[in-house]
Image 1 (cartoon, helix red, strand yellow):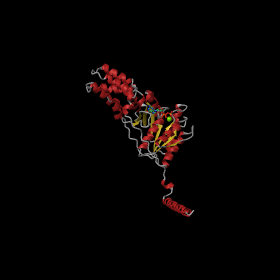
Image 2 (cartoon, helix red, strand yellow):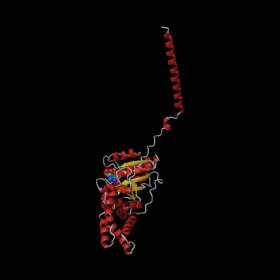
Image 3 (cartoon, rainbow, N blue to C red):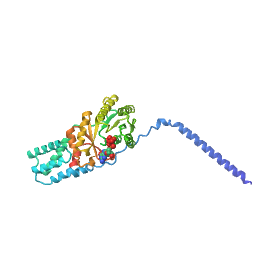
Image 4 (cartoon, rainbow, N blue to C red):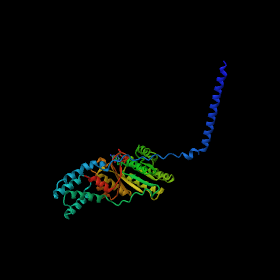
Length: 355
Ligand SMILES: Nc1nc2c(ncn2[C@@H]2O[C@H](COP(=O)(O)OP(=O)(O)OP(=O)(O)O)[C@@H](O)[C@H]2O)c(=O)[nH]1
Ligand SMILES: [Mg+2]
């Protein structure tokens, strides 16, 4: 019985000590909270980590089908040493099968024949190099670099028929811009096709870019105008606008795209800074015919040639450069985020003809 008071005393002392410790901890915590500035001032939304384009596959790998197609057939022909008229005809035939286009093939062959006449090409190897050089000459067009730093925001308008690869290209392009430290706003200007906006939103989330969207069936010009205005207010570096690839008629589509351009110019008279026409390389010569229609309606400043990985007729790029005289800006060589390459004519031709 005598031990009870001592036990109780110890317990009371323990309680007292812990409440003092808890009290001083509370006081310290309050003091620390007072020293910190309010959350709103410090906790700016974290910049989303730029989505680094996935491990880049070599350009030559993306061109494997074309290299295995007409390029392999050319190499087969040129493995023979004898250069005569028959061989030149055979070369011409192979080039015709590559979707390069008749006029462009004729131009290319005329240049090769002229060199042969001047006795500049002594053997098959020299003929091969001549074809390569003439190909490079065909796709080297004056193309001032895209001035990402010059315009605020830089506005890309992306056009092309349905399924050409516009939205995918926008996603890849946005990823490139984010990886180089730019902020990007995407404009969901394809209000015609159900699910087009969702597709763009998935890309937006993936690469860390906000998407400005309107109502389904709404006016695409209004959506893109809003996006440019918002980018101006929020000092966003780059706006990339998606558009419909199909309306009820082709004329309607061209009218709509022309209106989009006019309305963008109300937000920024210098925009759009780049109007990119997306062409599907698997459409071959049809891609060139499509491009002519867009070119008549709009001031197209650059071509994006997609799905080069899916065709053996990558020679279409030579026809596109030669017929349209619009610089190819990018090529798509797959469905992954890293599968968009800036078009460098020399690197491209080297990857194509490399043996
Ligand atoms: N293999 C391959 N597929 C591609 C490439 N670019 C786009 N695609 C595919 O092509 C299909 C159509 O691409 P989209 O980006 O939806 O085409 P779109 O022009 O936006 O089509 P609409 O919205 O219908 O006008 C998708 O399945 C893409 O993954 C490419 O470079 N290579
Ligand atoms: Mg689309």
